[in-house]
Amino acid sequence: MKYKIQGHDRLLKDPNTHAIVNTDMSAYRKYIQSVRTRQKQNDEMRNVIREINILKNDILEIKSLLKEITNGR
Image 1 (tube, one colour):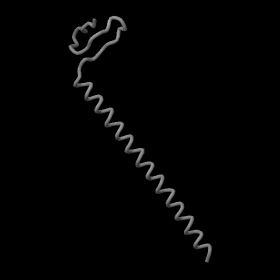
Image 2: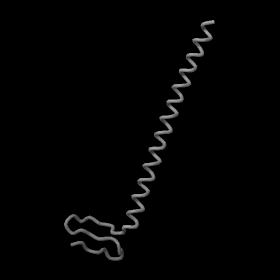
Image 3: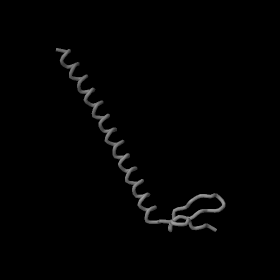
Image 4: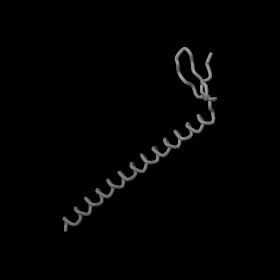
């Protein structure tokens, strides 16, 4: 059986583990949404970095080919 913490309506204390549990589902959903948003932003950033690296390699390859063409003359 969990006990209410005095002065905090949405906090309960588990007598066995001494853990404090937040029962505010609205705050939990908000937290989960922020985690998902942050994760999505991180994924998008990784994709942008990956695309930039591909473009860098393409430019280096083009540069190398141009050097070969100009040295061949």
